[in-house]
Length: 239
Image 1 (cartoon, rainbow, N blue to C red):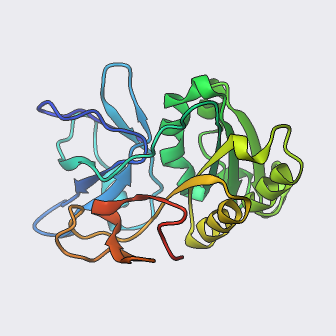
Image 2: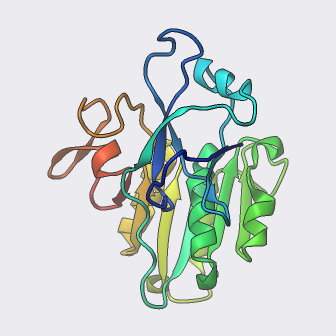
């Protein structure tokens, strides 16, 4: 986890927004900035990000010392719209997709959200303690069955919506994770007539919509994930 302390005043980040971080260790390698979702906002207004070491950029981040200076662009993109009226939020996160949902859970904890977490194994379940601290009810699924129910996170979501304690129309869905998971979440929402929003994970080069490198298909043509998203209504995209 890293905490971003801006050298000048920046707008407060909202759940679902992201930052582009410059991680050049020397020269121009890596050349492009990397996108990272907002994980949490601290009480003194700093932004936190949670990441997994996967490539050169994150390996550089892992080696940074406290107080290191990075080039930061953000917050960028559109965040999750807050739930309206009396609808209860259902948050569905797969793998690292749980990261932006933590900030959302903390911002809407007064709405008593339910959080469905999916991971490959127990060791890959993220932010469980932080989410429990918001008062959210957690449901967990792991593919190897080492924690929670065995299977996919969409399995436990479907199980819940098959016999919900309240009318299905009283829920609103929020999702982030792998594309196949988001396709399933979107399909569930559309089939049940639920209001729903998903945050897409795409490779980005600029983060501001100039390069057109992160477009996604929609019924109205292609849209930019970084500029028009990353959060889209479930009926706005074609996965």
